[in-house]
Image (cartoon, rainbow, N blue to C red):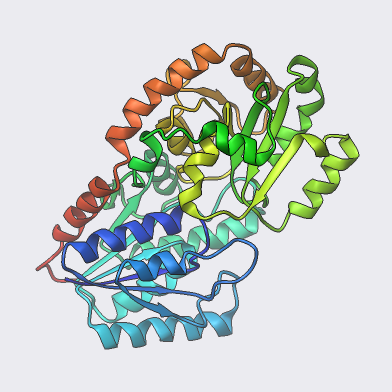
Length: 386
């Protein structure tokens, strides 16, 4: 098959990693794959090198921008049309909101035989102004009528989308976001080395996050409990993996709290270094307010690292209370602090739950299974009329 994937940005992120692994698997299966994306810029990194290593045709669409701009959006739509006319694909598969709307519109206009969209995270959520949610919902409803099938990375995405009137229930399939398991489950003896390189002592209790330093990621919520947590656990240190627009603000806040010496910020790191960073942690916290299904939660469990997460979107499908981790009501800073305290106070129990989570995630998150399931979605529609 000839397949085009459209995605808005190739920054360091779960949706982008998912898409690149899909492209890689399809290339290895002998398909002719094109990956089209908008300009890459800013402190959030780039996965362009990894995209090119798949062997797929990589095309930058200069007008594919995340921000709403009628002029850019019209140009982006026309660039999608032009690429479809050139490739003449059997399948167009879109990812993320902007690329999903423009790419689906162009593919439907050109009567591409199979048009699929993946929801990695819904663009509408409770933390946006009501008027903006209404606009996003209207656009997603319109775009859902211009594709054959919608893939989601978590069951919760289906429920939320259908409740908002986006598509039909029978139009959806959950395909969990695949990842390379081996770097996580093959436990090299790098924990002590990594901790030493980061400046941690042997008896430090390292609580980590793997996320962009941006809005709705919840770093402030972790900071809010620091003073009390340090009283209970004097060896507590934070490891923040990632970078973003809010880094200067967070650094200022930590300095004002007198906690700057307790936090190590790695900045951007290559994706292949994420497993060793997680293994350096005693506990991984994911207090995000808005996700699809956060890859960092199964990634932590794959290394058998205990997890505390907000009860947000797809997180409860992996972080199951009293089974695989600690789940906290989204935005409840007191309960977040209590869960961190509980996990650090009984690490043997926390690690036992993480080991159970490891078994479950090995079965669910193999990237090869993801590629196979997506292939089955495509083949439902091959040979049908649009």
